[in-house]
Amino acid sequence: VLLDGVELLGAPARVLERVRGGRVAMIFQDPASSLNPVHRIGTQVAEAVALHQGLSRGAARDEAKRLLDQVGMPDAARRMEAYPHELSGGQNQRVMIAMALAGRPELLVADEPTTALDVTIQAQILELLSELRRAEGMALVLISHDLGVVAETCERVAVMYAGRIVEEAPVETLFAAPLHPYTQGLLGALPPIDGPRRVLASIPGGVPEPWAMPPGCAFAPRCPQHGPACDAAPPALLRRDGRAAACLLAA
Image (cartoon, rainbow, N blue to C red; front, side):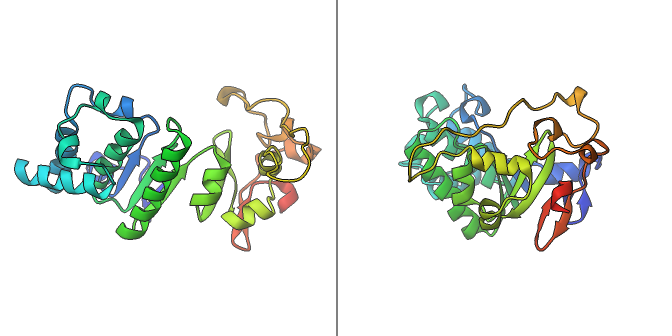
């Protein structure tokens, strides 16, 4: 895992301390379990600000309010005195985004940030993340199983299967012409938005357990294009024409 050419896996603690929550921040999918239920919202955001920016208590609270205003928290000054259980799921997620911004990150990782929210609030949170990315000039990595969210939000997509990237491409290219059979299966399972109704396609079988991976391609037992060569060794992720795929058929 490289950040500006620096390997993070196995990096010393002093290096990771500057990265975690600072250069790289994360938003989790369930804000209710990420926030401390016995502390007020303002205290938690101000604590993150003080930790990363070294501000005094008063200055940290002022910055916490500014961040809550920035992420669209209604009546931020009053909400700072609330506890997490007194806020809605969407409001708690805005709190988590404000805390992530406290370290002024270069990279924001959002892990299923809208899973627990209704459709209207989902759209608001995704639009907020897109606006913040543009305004703050930071990179955004969105982890999601929702292909509609991916299509609307992302510029580039990496598809993972059994813990490995099997395809990577610009979002328009991937949705228009997927190369890997797993990506083709995912897109083939989407219901059509127009035209006649049809039986949805599915991918047979299940994802292999980490301790029982097949000898070659992890997707081979489920792949409709499986051949003998697929069982020889895991295919490399080959890059060409601005995209990549880990499949012998795409070589």
